[in-house]
Length: 229
Image (cartoon, rainbow, N blue to C red; front, side, top):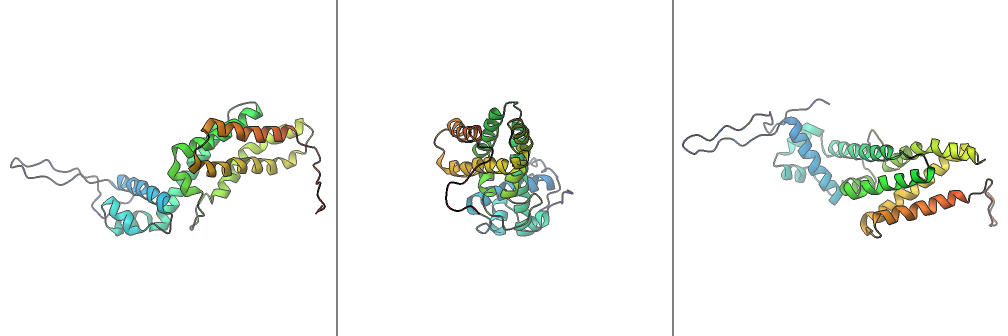
């Protein structure tokens, strides 16, 4: 994306040195790229704290020490800034999960998936708070639900191979992948504020439920209640 030069004079020009008489030179001004990153950082913090509706362009501009037109020049408005923040966080989380799935044993893969999400929550708490809110604007990468679907796709093929090896229908792998990733994601939302028990213990309990649930699966599960359809 082409960086704009902010209307606050963000041209990358450095401040002049103080004159011999002690008069101060002009302050250092940000380049367009630096100003854009500053606005993204401020927006990320405010969106996490107050949500999209509770954050205003005026507040973003004030915290950045610029006028409102500078925000509009870089992002076209609050919606544009929010969309870029969400897009970055989604890519970061997906990258962490994808890079984390390196083991060969299925149970360890479950552990790695759980740790990847919990690591993201722990390291990028503001980002996760933004992602789990319903988005009021459209993003190129969609919503948090679609991100969870993307992550599930990463483990779908692995489950399919396991299903085939154990005599289960591999066509059901997508369903189970969505269920497993969804379980981890919802538990992560709860742990976001609880932070107890410790991360490793949470991961262990998640894998305990998932792994032993998979281990004891019936090839043709049946319903025990009266309703059959």
